[in-house]
Length: 438
Ligand SMILES: O=P(O)(O)OC[C@H]1O[C@](O)(CO)[C@@H](O)[C@@H]1O
Image (cartoon, rainbow, N blue to C red; front, side, top):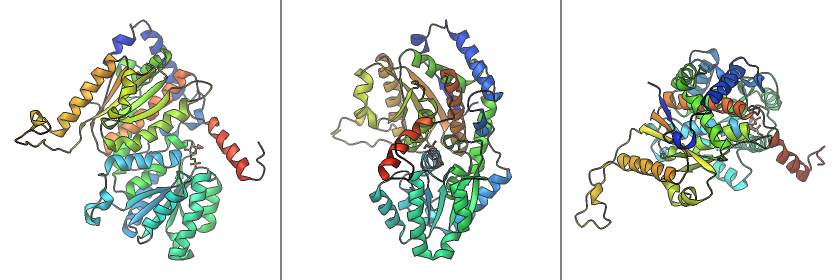
């Protein structure tokens, strides 16, 4: 049984089946490009075969994480985009909310804080002041080492660490995750004597969650990274064949492209567990940077249900018909709570007495699908059997592969991001960076 069930219940409303053979042929071509390593961006396919829990590099990551767990109250992860979003997604999915408020012995591991994903002085100051009385280790993650946001945060955090621990000890408390052989961060780390972990040269930032970039912070936070890799490996086997009937990952990629051709330009990833909030940020970068180019691409947006049914819900139900939803549902959340009885029934909720909150959430999910489908918003449903490392590893891989295939179906290179440079150039000029005049 798959860990992830993929369906499009109202498919018949949007396809009459006449293009099924064409889509199967297109999926087969895209699959061959991917697995034959012959498509655009073919040098970026290192993620296609996920690492094993027994690999030398996985062992080094786990060892480094154990050292940090033994020494630190808090890990400060510095990075942006793919060098941050995957770690945060997994940690928030698999760590109870507000667990930093719990006594240390009830937590899975040191608290993980993130820096370098924005340029906000007040955010940076707040994080550093919270860390003032804690034992801190830093993991700076940057493939290039030249990305402005994390590089600037690293400067500030390094100086802060030197003031806190002195130059020598500070150097033992910083570990850099970067390219194996080159780049500004590697040179900086070498000159400072920091420990280092590597992101393989053939894995781009947004596909790097299952490398040291994501795995070290996850492991420090107490997540079972071996299980996560096993989940990804199982998914890589499950989604290895081009036949659409047997491959839910490819069906999802095909459905999104079919709907896009029908004018559905926005995909709204909606989840019913708030723990998916950071996961949705990871997903937005994956699809946004991979597909939005050459004047094409589905705009990836996200919502938290039922929270956003009370804000975006109106727009989804009655606004322009230019979106489809991908709904993430978790079958077993592992948490339960019953609705209590009140004699006078002041709020009219006694009809729910004895029902579980999960059951109420499930009916909200089912009712919303029905309402949105009635409102002509196609719903693709992804049901995850449960929330643990194995299933989350599966889910990461599912979306990575779906994104790569989808990009090829769309006719773009899903592994580059030339458009990101535009804002950087303008910002550099405004900041007076030498050599930047346009
Ligand atoms: O790891 P780096 O090189 O700092 O890059 C961080 C992020 O910045 C981008 O290159 C965009 O500028 C992303 O693709 C990447 O995930």
